[in-house]
Length: 476
Ligand code: FAD
Ligand code: MLT
Ligand code: ZN
Image (cartoon, rainbow, N blue to C red; front, top):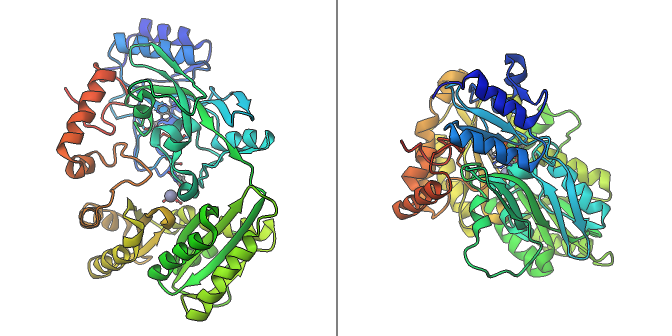
């Protein structure tokens, strides 16, 4: 495939209207690389539609002419899914202008938003209606709900509210052949055959382009208690989680594991981040209880759990926040870990999950492997341990050459992912496959599952125009 001839370019330009088909190199540049600058692609144009109809029309033209399209949301993804290949023959479709909140229905606890709405704007719209939209990620100020749906994003509230997949009632999707699937239902019960919408969730733009979604809202949070606790080891963290759940049930809404090195990196690289405790400890958890009832004694439940744990040595020290300023300081520490890691140097990232109870054994085994085999790296293993998801990352030590360190990536990934398989875990817990993990999916997914995935891809996109080469290898 090569770049389309001028009449076809004019046709695409007519679909989106004046100035909305970018072709100048300087205009294209921001859309051609991912935020970590690992992938660099080329595209003949970037289209900026502002209606679902325009997205569908773009696809009809591209399908007729076998032009590959790459949907792009906030471009905060980790797997290169939103970056075009290097052929220069693909069209990037930016969803940023589809950013209207179409409806908020507080009585039905639902909201309909367009794909290009920033996640933070959806959270704000829910709040304005005295409701709560629970998806929360460090990138929420720049990622879009279309990207969140397409990667089935996770984040810091999964243990209570589930992943993005669990927050969806209905979808509107532009299909490869230009039809618009309009299924923006607000129903919680609907058993009418196959759940087609679920196929687009986590499909990373390979089955259709999501243009809008009907999302679930929840009761507004009126009581919050947050603690930063130093724990003896990851086993103590898992034990503390079980105790918190026992004491407060559904109220546990976040439970994040943080190693000492993450405190060192954030305090060194991120202005304003301070170590919350006086002495250094090997491991910490940031945990939060929340409730929709203002009178719910979340603080008491948290301290009643922490006090005996302190006496037993499970917890070595802890601070419970007294106000919103202290709370946001703790969350800033947690959410800037990826940025601090980036500023510190190159990193080898592994977004994995294992059953929660297996987290300590996994950290022990995989950590030992890293110490034995990657002496030039420093393990930065943190994450959403309440739902078994670890960001098992290895940062380059300051004395190491960046290129030589990154060249170790394949060997390290193989060892870590093989171990994940041994633990019945997943090689992509929340970031998806994109182009980064296509070969990994082929290696670790059950063959029957891969066959079914290819059949689904063929049924939805017989000409292979939708995000070619992402999730599944291109079929020719
Ligand atoms: P993009 O990066 O633009 O795209 C991601 C994929 O979706 C691509 O394949 C793209 O083609 C496709 N796509 C985008 N929009 C559409 C659409 N409308 N229709 C069809 N396909 C589409 N992720 C987590 O899960 N949990 C975290 O805790 C988390 N924390 C993060 C913290 C930071 C600081 C950063 C930078 C990222 C973090 N991420 C996290 C990763 C990222 O923010 C999520 O994957 C997010 O869901 C991507 O959304 P996006 O709009 O940026 O999508
Ligand atoms: C996070 O939880 O901070 C991100 O998903 C992980 C990352 O950015 O590496
Ligand atoms: Zn994460």
